[in-house]
Length: 262
Length: 254
Ligand SMILES: Nc1ncnc2c1ncn2[C@@H]1O[C@H](COP(=O)(O)OP(=O)(O)O)[C@@H](O)[C@H]1O
Ligand SMILES: [Mg+2]
Image 1 (cartoon, each protein chain N blue to C red):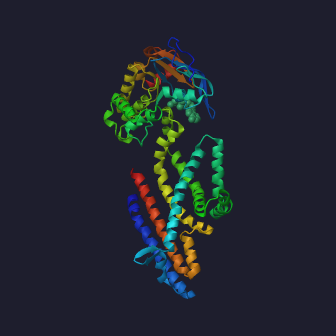
Image 2: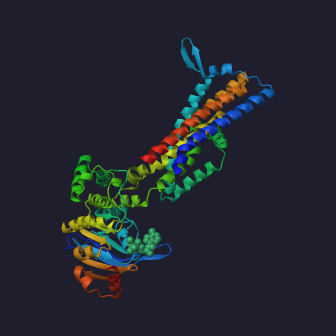
Image 3: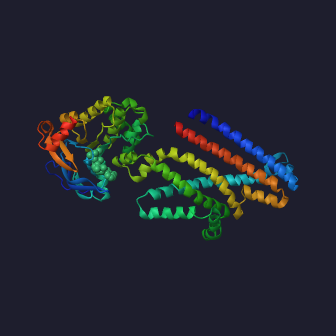
């Protein structure tokens, strides 16, 4: 019974997905006709790719996508580093370390990401003298790092205490115990949710357009300001985010599968 | 430098525990004014009912638990808050757990290599060669490249013994090393332990295997509620137990 459900459910999910998509599309076409919106899809491909003098050139939307990807990738690594460091601090014997970690986690979890971005951009960036792009990466990393730390912590505490005791009995120090014994075993519980976290990261990264980083969202806003192709551009931008998120979700599923069999 | 209490005394005990106290939150008194010594080359067997503090004593010996009172001296080094002393003692004391606790992500040989590489700082080839010799000794050289989950319980426990021996400890602690094993695998592990004893290894063995205790144990200690009730020489202990509690315990278990 259980196995049947598992093999069936992806198809069911996709069927539901396309059903909702079709229904939504139908409603939008009906609705836009009512408000008298005239569609101009023809110019959209040019914002993705242009064909100039015999070679292809990326348009602003693809440029924006590349920036989004870049921000996501950097933030993924930096947030993983912050997450690991915070998790280790929380699990450390040091009272000050645990307190620092808690202060960081509570301030990140209890303030809006947008406020954090503005805070870094308007307050910290001038002080630290860092550019917009780095500010964006830093803001997202600090935000996602708080969630990544929970993933790391959960992965680490799931390793049986016997592994700690065996390492201790052999005379391994704390660093070697983490590096050679605990983290390699925690990896299977850390990598899949961390990959899922990349999906949130892609979506949250849209907020960096508010500090004029030319990511996908910012490029979309710029095009609309010039052309008033509101519906077409937002549809296109949303579709690109959707595809990107679906690819990452798929990758997360694959890592889960990989670690289950390994 | 590590400071030792004695230098050329005439064979002092390798382990001396005097008036050791250990209380867990609760409060549960696990060791209550507990005193015991272990001579060099001796096989000391500790028996006693569940919850009497046997594991706690072993865990205090290698620093897995900190004692609340009393004193533990291992090979002339006082086990105290001095980090250097603690490390030196941990390195001189090997431990085998009831649950094996092998590293599941490493092959058998790498399990045995690990501490040699990271703690003893041996070269890869030297560590590997020594590991193979130890695996041969526990009869598992053909499993060197297997992973722990591919081995039976008895084989895993023999690897765990090889892994502890890799640190060249002066004392080996066994905490119910055969209790988690299927009956048909107990023998192979006890055989390895017997071999170690024959080679003169100092051993502290917590076990419910009375046959092994009788045959291999030089001295038997019966403990209950955190202290020693009775100590006796191997065979004699079982033939002439002095205390009523010891007799009751032996009657139950034999
Ligand atoms: N980590 C711990 N926390 C609280 N109580 C403990 C802990 N470890 C052992 N104890 C208690 O200490 C007593 C002695 O336990 P233990 O040394 O494991 O006994 P034995 O190995 O002889 O069965 C028991 O009452 C046990 O419940
Ligand atoms: Mg026990």
